[in-house]
Image 1 (cartoon, one colour):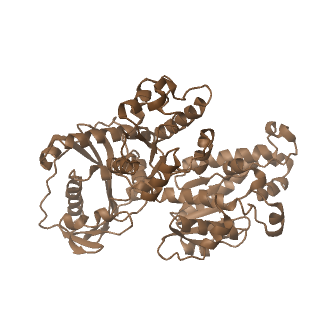
Image 2 (cartoon, rainbow, N blue to C red):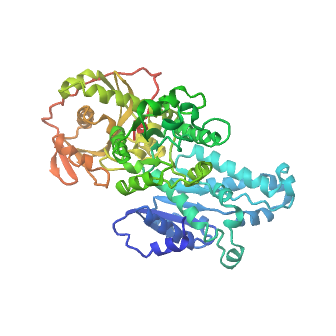
Image 3 (cartoon, helix red, strand yellow):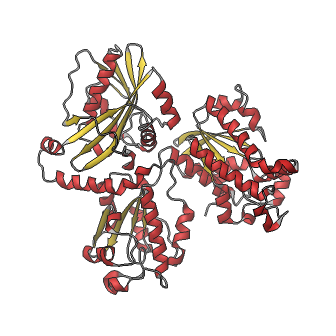
Length: 587
């Protein structure tokens, strides 16, 4: 349970070793306590939110003045907080005949603000949905009346969502949804509002702060990618080893509905791109039988990327799943009904998220949905292929074990690559990859689609987008490089790659192309930079291993005598009608 007092105490702690993120708060109401709640919540998440807070109700003055302190602060994230109590007063001040277009006018004002910001900053902008408080002027009839406040505020929320669909840099903090969950009476403190102009209660502020931080973390590449589930009394009721397949609770009768609804939700997560795995203490054949034969099971074996059922320690099995997927524990969530198993896993693997499921399975789903474990900053249609991609990777792993010699194994994969520019097809996938990649990422620069469109249009830059496939399947877009002219030198602004294609020789293939670009630009030296983060130690020696000279973060490669590097990868032009699958499906 989040508590404002505890968050306020957090603000007194040492932030010096935490990751800094510059946040600007522009609000039409008092925002000091939102500032406190967000900073305190950031401490719990290992983030140092350096916050610029504009003066009270000075949004337009800050945004439309290029010399304002807001622009001088140069934030990475902007909270543009417009609230319902202010909105309803503006609505009442309108002439009756103007009220039917109130939502469109307010959306136009927000568009003007966000457009002005985007002209001067590349920051992410977080807008807030309005709490749909009915003023009860028309009672339930307000739902049929375009000039009612309820009708207009709901319309405005829809316009906000539609605008965010068209503007990649805009994100929505859904305060209305949070209000539905908490109840209006728990989000609002009338005495505080009239005394201090604080629109959200002290009890509600931590919830808002958490949701803001969820969005910020997702845009920074920190989010959950994998859900690992236990089986007995978690995915179905009962113990399949004791009750038999026909005795477990699943389906539309009695308590079975609880588990059917949970499975349907997990299936939706899988369709969204979350990797679903099983970790259970069971005999494998018995554990798999319901997935194969039970008519009421929603999840089937083809929905599961890694299935582990044995009598070994669950901690060891979770480590095996992590190793197989090649992701961090901080990207995984583990569900288990057994408090003992949860406690043991938490103790052994602190980075793994292990929700404390309620005792009553009927409460599982509401509890999990309220945690908002799977926040994301992007979604593409190709995300639905993720489980298939991991299945292909498991096949490669099994194939590799049949070869003692790495060169023979790489040759047997029959790899084919295509080097593509940034264009309308590759930009969404490259942006997604830049948001998600942490380990093989030399400088960890995060790009939005807008950023990449500007790079694609600039003569100062060149970019390489690499797509790879082999005999087992299509990896999709697996690497992305941004190169910048710097006089007689070529600077590698970004070099990132999916960890799933490590040791395939892709780095050598890409370097050959970087050298080609340098020669076309008449550059004589390539400059590489490694900026250390807590997650990219994997590439600390990347440039050294490719023949660059230097140390620490700065590396140089004169190209006059460069000898092209060998890679067991054939360069081809893939069919234009083949889908571009983002390698970020793996990240």
